[in-house]
Amino acid sequence: MTDSFYRDTLTGLIADGVVTPADRLLVVCGGPVDRDTLVAIGFTDVAITNLDERMTGDEYAPYRWQREDAEALSAADDSVDWGLVHHGLHHCASPHRALAELLRVGRKGAIVFEARDSLVVRAGVRLGLVEEYEVTAVAANDGRWGGVGNGPVPNHVYRWTEREVRKTVRSLLPAHEHDIRFAYGLKVPADRLGSRQVVRVAQALAPIAERLAPRQGNQFAFVVAKNVRRQPWLREG
Image (cartoon, rainbow, N blue to C red; front, side, top):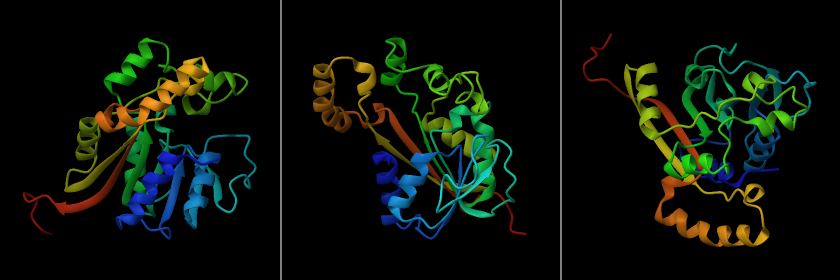
């Protein structure tokens, strides 16, 4: 099971020369979608990590699996090319701390897929079309997993803005300027819209909405390429 926005964003990064399929990836809060999407693209050196105690070690073959806390990774500084997460930071008690860990271990930087804190998404929360706390994820895992830290308590869905990403990265890594780029998409929440007719209308209108207001979609990614330029006010040595 692949994710088209995930796949297309990474494929675009490869086309732009930002990422290569040979890059070493450390995936946090990982799952089957990561495995299938990364295999489809052709990545070869990948470790998929999570806190799921049900794993035996071979679920993500041909990739490696290891048990890791996204907020306290065991990997050394700059030990992989990219830290990557696909809709997992919001399962952390501190999404910012997990982002800091991705940037710490990623020599080239971090690639993050999360929700954007847009006006449309906020409206969706109010209308009950989008969850503020991921109750359904825990319910789908027998009430035992899928919440904060993959535990039984439903996590708040922390959503980001571009400004917040920039401020966080500058706070974590102030010695350099970094190349931060964003990607946007729109996926119709068919399972929450009810009737098939409503879903069909929404799917027909989605491409128009995506063109007119791309930042209001429910799919969002940001890529932080580290240490592009040293700050001019820092002396060499």
